[in-house]
Image (spheres, rainbow over the protein chains, first blue to last red):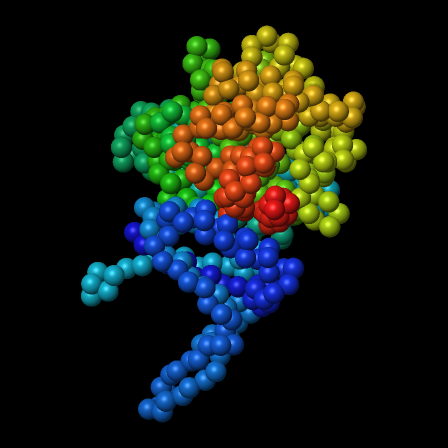
Length: 118
Length: 415
């Protein structure tokens, strides 16, 4: 099965991505993490902070374009990974050493192909 | 948590396990016993505030729970006309009358060890034994256990239900096994206790109020229960010693700023002398039985570490030798990794690497200590690129943020 891991990071996490002493530790942790789970990963990407996001919606027939993420919360989506695993528990184990858990969180969702849902 | 609150909680936990074990060994049905006790606790919460707390709260709970069990068994028995059920019900009434009529704590036989043996029965899958014990003997919440064991609460709940159903369906006895069966069956009980301890030890070792730290304390509690019931079993004593000697170091595992302190840099004056003494005592009592075993050997290794509090030195040669015995007689991944590290400490890093290489790839892949030790050995041998890669693997497999930061700093020193 494929499981998508949404990586939810805090403003402090995003801040430590930029240059500076915190950046080295931040990126070493992430590179090490992705090396450790590499053989189970079939996809993934890093996303810049939510301030670069654009949100579109249509309300009462009118199109609305907004700067910023759809959900305005303390944690925001900082990236995602897709695991190929046998069980959800295996995905939980892979997620357990993700650097963002401290302060942030991950959300794990099984990916179900559209053909299986209709 | 204040000492008073802790005392109340421990008493409640003590009672819960005792009452549940007693009910379960009588009716042979863990689920029924849990339901009945749960019911009794709910009724207590409803009635005690207005009627006052009964003189013997435990006896009150037992009477209420017992009534529930008897009702249920009687109902079932008219349905099934089962002679067994009838016997159970009669026995239950007899025992409960006896227990309730006299001073409670003296008459209620402690059946928690019997309960643990049922939980760690060969028919119960090994990975569910520790959670089953934590839930039934200590009354821990399944969500909390699931978080500690890295599984979904719903999955764990299902497995627990299935395991309890199995205990009943297969007629697994709530009994201390016969002498010839005892060593193997006891080993399963001890392994489950140690699994719970390991979970609490590995993660968040500094959090005072941390749930996971609690799990290490709960495991020690189970170890003490086992030793109390089987005071002459050296491996039970060995496990208790191992847990106490390890737990004693907890206050030294973090610096004041919360950063990780590896064992060889810990300040031994911060180790808890009372726990060390209790651990040494258990190890000494184990040794009197002249029957060795893996937990006693592991405890011996911790005892050599503890000696630094007296001597100021760590006898790494002795530790290497003990790990050698462990690998030869009771091989495990943990023992091999421990031996590899000890070989590095005694100036034999190449032998250390060879010890690590003997571990199958499939096991080594996600084993954090394997990569941490490998990185350190490679660094000592100035195999820089390999060391950097091994550090990265270790960092990526580390859950504890403080340990991760420490490893990141170690990796930087390689360059």
